[in-house]
Length: 432
Image 1 (cartoon, rainbow, N blue to C red):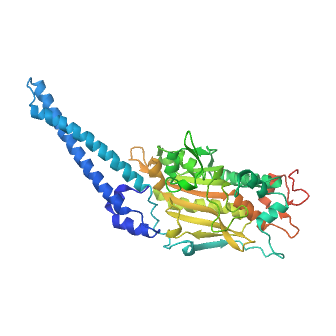
Image 2 (image 1 turned 90 degrees about the vertical axis):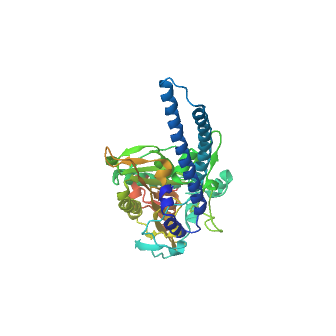
Image 3 (image 1 turned 90 degrees about the horizontal axis):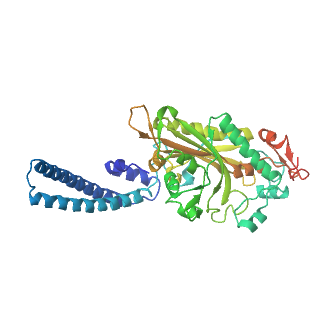
């Protein structure tokens, strides 16, 4: 959530900055509401002052044994009625102002390149050379189905399109990737592992920016109303909701493996096959809560930690700086990691690493004290995939496939698979 006071005091700056993102939200409606809200608030404060003054006068007269003037008493009753009316009006205006500001996206960081969409994103670097195949590389679903690692047909019978099903060594490979990522982030990168709930309330979703913006993409259950998480970012951020943290405890670095659930899947006929875009997918998430002056440096650290997964797996990738028009709703700055997929001959997103600055912290009321006696300030929150597990498995199958249909297992994963070096037709059942 944006700072209301900042918007009121800098309306044209906010307007111009938001225009860089795309269609401008209804800033004039918000400013109009704020003007009315502040006017009612001032009138309410004046009425309360008059009420207090009249009450004190009545009290003084009674202490002196005098009878209060009927006009003073009548004025006090009238002020009380006006106060109730103004309180009701103020509550309605605050509710409408809060509803509207929750639809405003975050302001882009000054360093973010200005652009309309993904075509204006900037490539920061490439790491690793794509493998030159002596045969036409097959798509991951063909490799996986031939080896009995994935079974999307049976998944569709159970749940419909865009749900995964891993079998045999496919299931073990997925588990190996999860364990490798968690071991790396907790053992070497200093993250604390959390195993969070997969169902959260509307307040938690609102705090991280999923509601109200993405309500149609969420899976919701009723009685009580809860939502399946679209990312572990939601419970990890809400771990410190409504708390005031100690400055010396920052940064707080958290990681979690969870299944994730989103209704969106596929776009204009693309990614309708395979594991690239699913309603249910697994992810290892990275989250940081930090002081404002450290958040830019922590974004670079988070990016480096996500990159390290790809480096150790030996997968070619590139880093993209997203332009203003391609930023996520809650993000002030984002780097995308894109991994090379040989069957497509292009890089595809496997992680987004974002600095949300104080946007989520305001919505979730997460603050810290820089010093023991200092006034609380909002933390900055950061998040990134470290990595999306299904897409990492896709990249492994495609980049390490062999002409005979087998798949060579990256060395860092072999200890999680009892030393297995290659998945073949002979060992694909997973009984090692």
